[in-house]
Length: 164
View 1: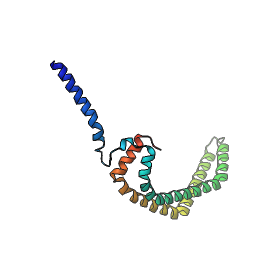
View 2: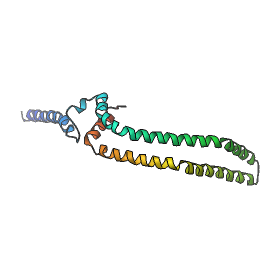
View 3: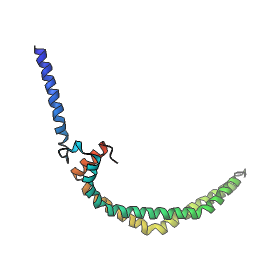
View 4: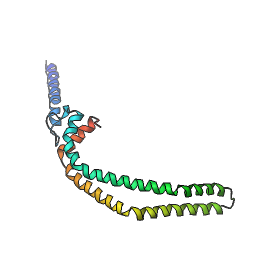
């Protein structure tokens, strides 16, 4: 009889533990009743106002990044004929058993890379400075949101539910 009571008591304790686990999960900072049942759409809807706060700063940062990327792609395209000529010269220089021609081509390649890098620094400095300021703004705006327990809980739920 004693072992039967022990089994029943153990079973009751397990049931009580399982019953209280959801309550403990809701004790997570930022949790609200019903969080576990939220759909991705509901999570997104609750996060939307916070995302809207960040949208102008993030959009500006993205636009500046695209502009910098476009400038870089243009510079690389402009340098392509010279780079192709250097590749052809390097192929021809490979036949030189002394290696002198290969070293000369290598120096020319390094000079081209340095010229492109210097050009990028000079031309893109205003945009790079603008981008740094925009990045600082995004970080400043994100800091209070990261400290918000409700937002963190919603982000955790979105990750757990594989919301995209």
